[in-house]
Length: 340
Image (cartoon, rainbow, N blue to C red):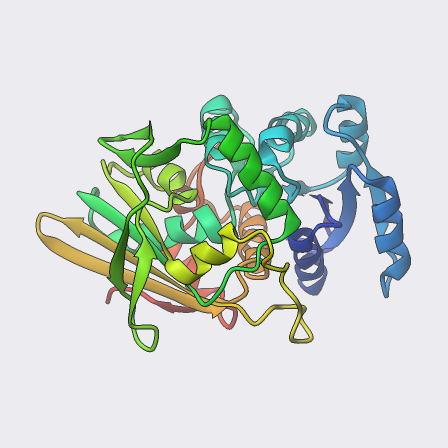
């Protein structure tokens, strides 16, 4: 593959989008900046140390999207709320005949992409991010030679959660779409409910150890995992401290503490799968839930463009890629422990 290939990053001026642009350039791709705010794109071009191209386009203007994607090898959508941006950008990518990847954590948006583009032949990969993609890869790797599981548990051990404005906006859209209800994956289907929030303890690997978590703190894994694995129960959990950070409107956005622009927030994603009374575990550790999305989605892009895939059309990360190999390729960004 020629790494000078051009890749459009839609939402390039956002917090995650900037990490993705930097990672593309680090790996030799040519990043084309796109999004809805022409002035913000122009400012990012002016501030860049090396030349960049900007192609503004609104998602409600198909012709502008077509111009933005012209000549590109692929498009990565980093612009939420994905309930608004995903479908128009997937449609534009399919018109252009190029792969589409996004970093959506919105449960309903991911479900709509997987269901709505089932007939696509061009690669379409939603949720190729910390939420949805990483958990799906860990679950798939943990299953190994198992073809199914009775239950899947994904516990997020975040030291803290400083949400971006985009995270807050997407969360508000999801809240409105659900009319304030909560959602879980049980009995083989998404279930909307009004049950009270509950807490329990989760035993993370050391040094995190036993921590209180919010049970059924549902993330995109409840869509990505069952999209390709026969499992009737997928449950996700969030450390209580991080859930409180997210709920507190005064919690500031993440602040950079190193040369890569990462915040000091650390994470452990702990996956437990059960089948017939047996258990298998897979764990990933790293720094900054937003920054880690960049190597995740760019590695996925590289594999798609070089043909290192296991599926065609629309698919989640676990179905599209060799999960153990993919996860191990992310060092030093991630420290991964998989079943032997």
